[in-house]
Image (cartoon, rainbow, N blue to C red; front, top):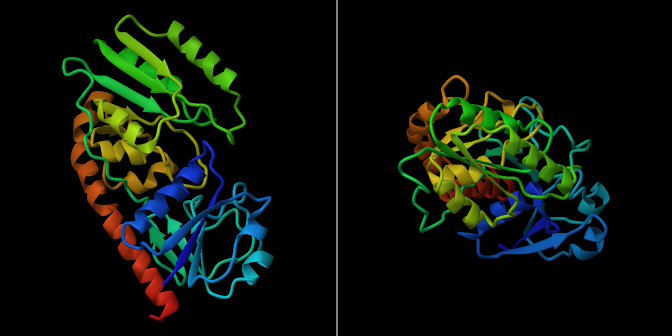
Amino acid sequence: MRGLFVNSEKNQCSIYESGLMIYNALRTKHKDIEYMEVSPRNMNERIYSGFDYYIFNWHHNTLPISKETLDNIHTLKIGILLEVGPTEIKPFMQEDLFDAYMVLDPTKKQSGKYYPFPRPLEVVDNLLPLLYEDVPVIGTFGFFVQGKNFAEVLQAANDLGQDCVLRMNLPDARFTGVSFQTVKDFANRLQRFKSSNVDLRITHDYMSKPDLIKWCSQNTLNVFPYHRNLPGLSAVTDQAIVAGRGIAITDCDTFRHMNKYISYYPKETYLQLSKSTLPGIKQMQEDWSNDKFVAQFDKLLFEQMVGE
């Protein structure tokens, strides 16, 4: 069967990157899936017929495809739901647009045409060794938006009471509403508040997924200081899980898929989490592998095209 995967246009954006991640996972088995990137301005003209099924990385901002366009497609239409709420499956979709849904939240249960999926983890060879063996290396990264308390990471590093390296990568992004100058100003302010035991290194690189995974593999602990309640699961933890180093998350809805695997900060300290989370991270690597992701997709295709 031939499929078409429709993603939003390329941007420094987690929605676009998640779509690419899903497509790459599916392509490990389904070589017959073609790939297309469209913008809200030209999607109606560019999407064409002739496929057995379509997968849309739907999003109310980056790919708000209309029901009128979908009604012109007479084969299976699958919508990806990335911004899933703790209780609401599709908080931003006003209409029921698709024949089936890939719900990117493994905490959900299958219900009718709604199929829960994990975020598929990429595979990267040649991970890098720890940056330093003799001092803790704490890493944190992500787009600078409300609800991410990067200053908390510096405070925790100051409170360790021992020498450590704190690596912070804050890239520019298109859809956050925060200017890059604001990000750089924040980084400069942080330098004034570090204690003498902290070697603070701030960068602004927009890294490829493989490079970001390797960057995470150099850290003793990768930290995600989120304090927000928004639909969707965190995308940034994917690379840290693949890297296999310790992870510090907060008690936040965006990490609900990780709660059964690992503890969180401040229930445990950074140094405790750098060791206690390792078994859970290994289990996540197994549970959210590409093979299991594709097996769930095959189940969706069979049930929707052949029948349960």
